Length: 148
Figure 1 (cartoon, one colour):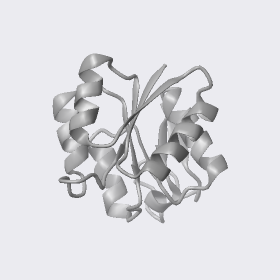
Figure 2 (spheres, helix red, strand yellow):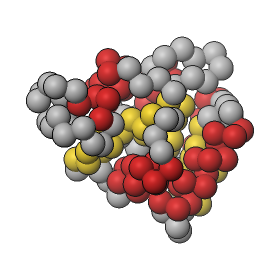
Figure 3 (cartoon, one colour):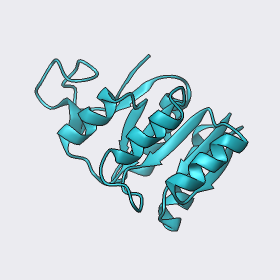
Figure 4 (cartoon, one colour):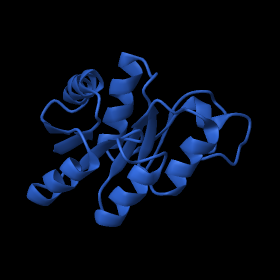
């Protein structure tokens, strides 16, 4: 499996690279520090899974997700973000993200979330579930959920 990590912070990108390697041991993982570099990388060698930061230079909020989905509508994109507000998470999921993984997620849960998304599931963090049973994932269990 080819994985593309799109994040402009080198420490975060390195952390995600290690987590992706643990989640999908046979993965070929590439890094891109900007949306433009990600587009170029995808044109050269499409990735089966893209881990996309929402806070890229020149892109505010969900703009990076919208631009990526417009350019590569069939790409499986999981959002990785320091933003963990419930409406932002739900918005990204509604726009077709394969999951939303807050950067505050602990190492073990990060690996589990990446594995779930790589296997075709959908990671929804506890922050998005709240009290609403109609929330993505359909549960108020307080744990990330996988749907496929």
